[in-house]
Length: 89
Image 1: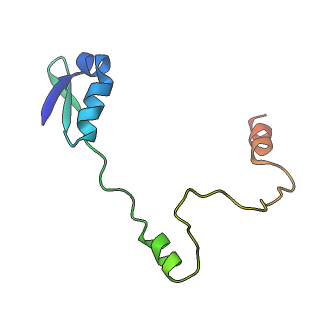
Image 2: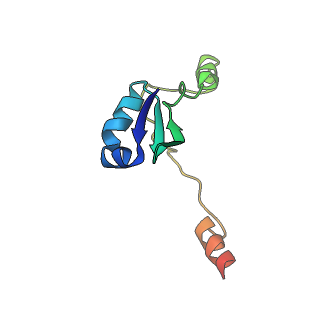
């Protein structure tokens, strides 16, 4: 595990994150003391359930990004933002 001081990390954050993205683990130190570790994210979230729905014919996917509903649901009553604003009063 590589060690990097907090000042060096702040100064060259992009460079160090690029190293982490490629699999390196960093030990962050402040005045010679270990304060944190930066590790790459584990494997992506399991989406087998989505593939299963497509295989069963219960969902359809054409390979692109989702476009949303063709007929969006109409919001009736109060919106979430108005409820939050009302709650803050």
